[in-house]
Image (cartoon, rainbow, N blue to C red):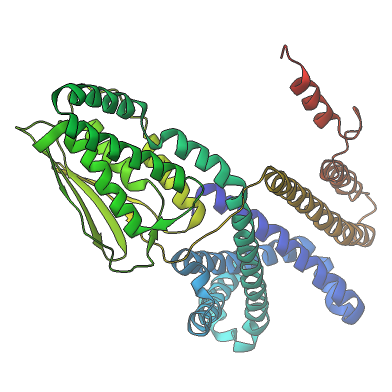
Amino acid sequence: MSLNRFLKELLRAVIMGSLLFFGFLGYYYFTDEPRFDLIVEDIGTEYYGNIIFFIIIYMVNMFWILFLIKKYNANIYTLKRLAIAIFGNIVLSFIGAVLARIIILNVFHDVSFEDFIASEYLSNYLQPVGIAIVISLVFYAIWYYKYRQENKVKEQKIIAGTASAKFDALKNQLDPHFLFNSLNVLTSLIEEDPYQAQKFTTSLSKVYRYVLEQKNKDLVLVDEELQFAKTYVRLLKMRFEDSIVFEIPEKSSDSEAKIIPLSLQLLLENAVKHNVVTSEKPLRLKVSEENGVLVVSNNLQEKQVVKKSSGVGLTNIQQRYGILTDKKVQINKTATEFSVSLPILTKQVTTTETQEMYIEDKRYEKAKERVEAIKGFYGNLTSYCIVIPILIFINIKTTDFPWAIFPTLGWGFGVTVHGLQAYGINPIFGKGWEERKMREFMDDDNF
């Protein structure tokens, strides 16, 4: 857990602990007045003691929950794993409660450890453990809901992001240098070997025809990519002759297996672009299928003078895989070999990219952000309406000095600003001023 995340969770623990404390205080006021009076008499000790108690319970459970989510992600929602998770929450809550009571009794009440052991009963822990379990279950439910919502958003991102990703893909699929070099080779072959030039032209046309056929697809059959890779390497071999040694399977083990289109071509082109290719140092290219991935590898003999790689080809492949699946593209480099593992997918992801759908998705994202902001404002307002009356009541009961006015005005100002931001209102420039100003700059040809 990073420091920022730790501080964020600590702040949540303080806020939730405060809400629970004042909530129980209000409950005791109506149901158990003697206990209420007892708490109010020493409210500072009671408040800070409860905050320490809640922080310890909250943090041990949060560490456990984050550990489970990192390890299992959505797979935690099986009967066995969920049972283990809840059992872990019970055990950690009990341990945390014991530790918290030791600290509180020792710090605030000067109770020795021996006296603490002698006076402890299991019933002392039923309430805090019960509260911790309820909060944990609520968290599991919220996280699952959030996971489902993120999946829906991810589906929307396929629509919004594929157009951009495919634009980059088409822009970088066939390097201009490759085309330039291919035409140079063709020019030489026409004079030296017309028959070979004819074969070269046929292969070159197949390469570009394949690009045009596959440009609107998210995934293609592995078998199609393998056949295209063979055609592409034939072009390379006409240029480099025996300086390239190529090994590739005839077919995939699964006829329905799919990968990102033109990914093999990008990787093969990268290998030729960044390595020495001579008859003395032949480049050995290999495509193989291993454990659900397609591995493209080559012996490493990097050029000494070469323009620094922009990484566009690999980044392009990684981004397109990132849009369609959680499976990662693995890149491995040793002193003698460079390899890239492409996940083989079995489910076709289909999308229809239109400008209207892209705009609709952007509106959806903007509306979602606005709804989240409004929900946050309502949560803040609800907390304000619950806590401030309790503080005013405590102020009236304990002292004549109106200290409650300070949190009332300070927090009230914060709630007001939060509400204005949530609804997009600028009290100085008016509602929608920011959007109108951005539109003004966008329409200004001299900007």
